[in-house]
Image (cartoon, rainbow, N blue to C red; front, side, top):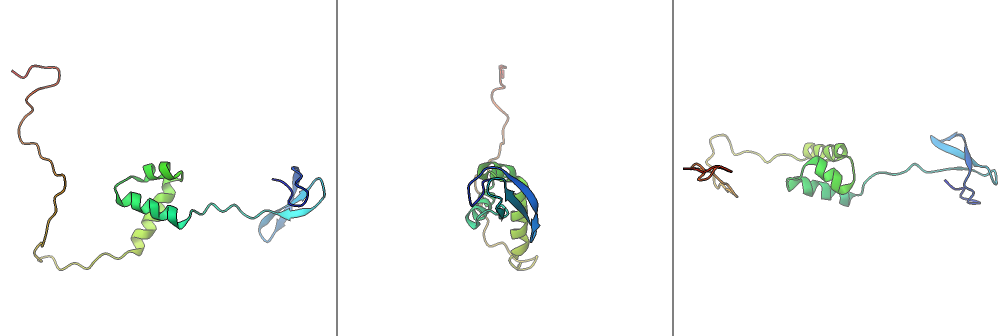
Length: 120
């Protein structure tokens, strides 16, 4: 870290001021503090993580793509899940109005060929 006054590269620690580490430049003897590094992700990144989760992507994959910890992604999703209220149900005996089946595949018969073997 360089001195903000003379840009000298060498410094030494000189205690704390209001919870921040204080440094002393070895070149000009100037005392300075460095703001804590903010690793808070932007709201856009958080929304992107939520969108990716809602599309079915896992926590670890989201973390790899966005270059953040999967634990952080999990905490964001958990926090949003607790903040959202579920829609009120119409009761247990209410008739189902509509069911959507998307890309449902069933296998009824046996395979015709076995891999590497003749099926006769």
